[in-house]
Image (spheres, rainbow, N blue to C red):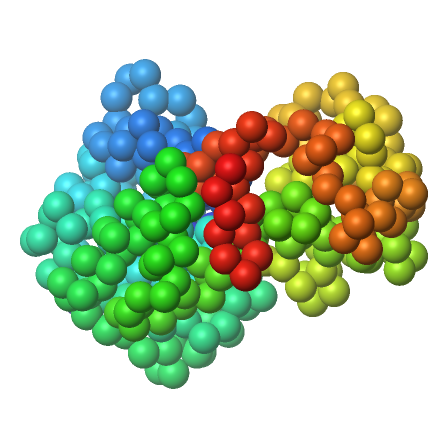
Length: 327
């Protein structure tokens, strides 16, 4: 039986598992910045001569047999057509779940592919498993056929996340999401990153302040120890930009972030990483006031970031706590 696996960036190690003829990991991010909707359409289409490296589904395939090489210019759907089974491996990571609902929404328009698609119900973090242990776990990982229930739930969820306000996502959390068991926890994690009613900060920013206030001076713990940070939405470079906002605004909440980070290009990850390691962080008095919920970050500093399709600014600052507060 010919099998292809589609997975998120957390499942990149599946490329060495031998579980399928080809594994296609999706490496794009959907939790930070404007949603790349036009780029996603190009990503799954047939490759044209104008597509830049890293912007097509075929760019991250590991093992390329001759058969794969001959068809890697095709659209994703056309490439998957000859396979008997298309397996979806996406874990509970919020970006993985967003990739999953985007993909299922896309496959809804291609019923011939959706009909032979199966969703693996993964109860562990793919990022923490190597290829050999994943292969050994296969008999214990249930696979369910993708039906109208999964496709419909994904489509509703994707439309809600891409909407210009977060209101539909709030309603979605309280609706029946049983067709996609890991979607609700991911949405709850994502909603917690909307600025809070009391401080104007998301959960990860508040957690940064808590950890720095407890004496964590280096960025390693903030960026890489998820069990300590206890938030799971963002990766290192995204966490870095959140930390920039706390440290480099008109009224900083944090001091000690290496000043060179103000000018190092965003794409120069090596230089940025070295600057993060040089940093020794502490709270300002304003940071302590924020931590005690006696100050509002947005009253003193600019807000300009995205939550799904919602553009958050000082003038248009949606807030989330016991409920959603409109600007």
